[in-house]
Length: 134
View 1 (cartoon, rainbow, N blue to C red):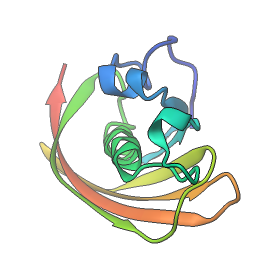
View 2: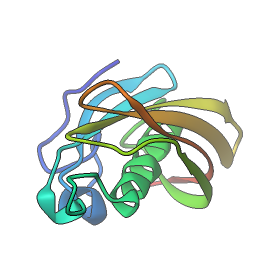
View 3: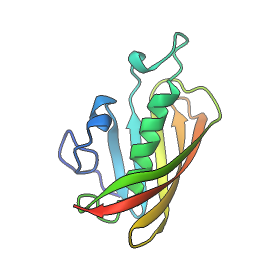
View 4: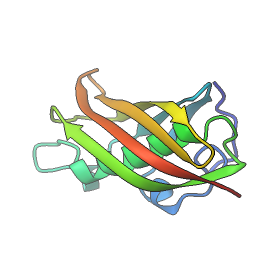
């Protein structure tokens, strides 16, 4: 898996929402992606738990990155469906690991999980995406 892409991109693509949330692409390739959501108190509740909306952005970008991992700068994606199951409160940085389960000519499917800074599984997700050549 590779992680050498221009700064201010998520695996070679400029994605404003990913930039807004400070997402960091750690690795992509072999139908997989790993994306980090650094902790930001602006996206946490008074107890310090990461907001579910921020986790949703992480999954949308992380699963989409796995879907385009075969050619990260050649393809963009549009999210068709995204299902998230929140299983525990998240504290600190959260890392999404995602895998493309099936890539068709235009529609692809991915699943992923998110773990917080303590290693706790905080959420699971599945999604379908339309691949679009750039």
